Image 1 (cartoon, rainbow, N blue to C red):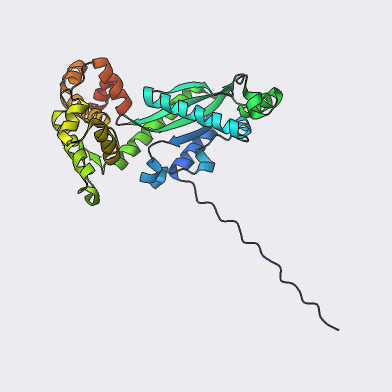
Image 2 (cartoon, rainbow, N blue to C red):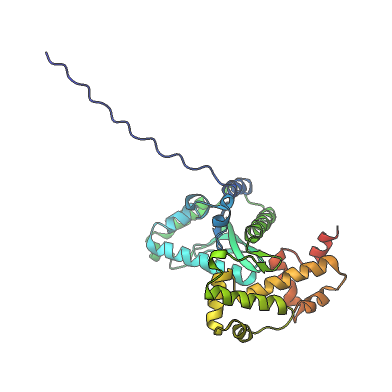
Length: 313
């Protein structure tokens, strides 16, 4: 009598353990729970690449996971409209530097909080949905779903407890201030007291040398009115070529660099002198005190008056 061999059971490998959440992922998840709305982020400037604590995974904090959002992203036309809607919000964040709330193309109302550091849009935080409105008339045709199904998904996307909008706005402002400070700390290796710390391996390149000459000229003349043609002449490049290589080598445009120098000088004057805000604006090269106040608030997260009061406490 022959014995039947027992066939060895195949043991399927255990699924890989997902990495623990980063500091920013944990903070966003905690905010989502406490505020009663989904909080996501778009890392515009690559903060996560500079500091691993602020890296985020796409399946965790980079996309909206509300039922209506998932319904929209289930077809190509919906994905395209969602992407367009997001980049329209990012353009507005870059142009204004201030938070606002508004509906997407499917009618979900969310709040967008820009993260601005040194005059540059670092990231944008999205929180919502707070409420729902009627979708665009073309939504059923583009998505291939009935109005009834879209309306049901919109209702399922809204939180049962009504979010406190003032609390949401305050929480997002605090998070944006923390991220802006983290960006400044990460950038300190390249931009410190208005000086660029240059990478030795790239110092010999012609583009780098031209950018250095332009940056040095801006540091000497940031209180004056500087034109791109004047700067290009100093760097021995055409204006178009200088704009391109300066942004690539320094990480920001010539005039954004100039604005950062002026804002840093303004901070020192506000903290150390008794000059009025208008005098400070003219001293550092701004021709309009209102323009200076807007630029200062976007970079420092506070008005010049509030900044001075905070520094003198």
